[in-house]
Amino acid sequence: MARKRTQEHLTPLELEIMTVLWDGGPASVQDVTRQLEREPKLAYTTVQTMLNILVRKGKAKRTLVDRAYRYRAAITRQKAAGHSLRDLIRRMFDGSAEALVMSLVETRQLTPETLRRLQEMLEESDGSRH
Image (cartoon, rainbow, N blue to C red; front, top):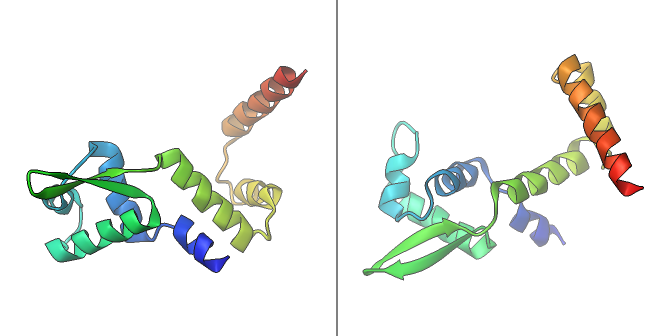
């Protein structure tokens, strides 16, 4: 079971690499290395290793094109965010999404305008169920 959670979780570096793939589409190792906004730049072999880990985790796919692999995202940004959010709620808020929202309100991360929009979304959602 712990393995499944590890498979879903993206490390900070994996997330940076996935962002390159989400924003730019299929890319070679060299393309990803160039597009990562890091100083100092990561070594080509480090990026290649991380891309291969993402493939193994099922987060990216690769295709051989002209003797070089091109990598692309295998999951959407939204799906990855959902996995990360579920993990955060489980670990930090004892599995309670309500506790997460209350924490956002208490720490003033949600503005009154955002809360109003959330209320409207909830009302629309309730209306569509009937």
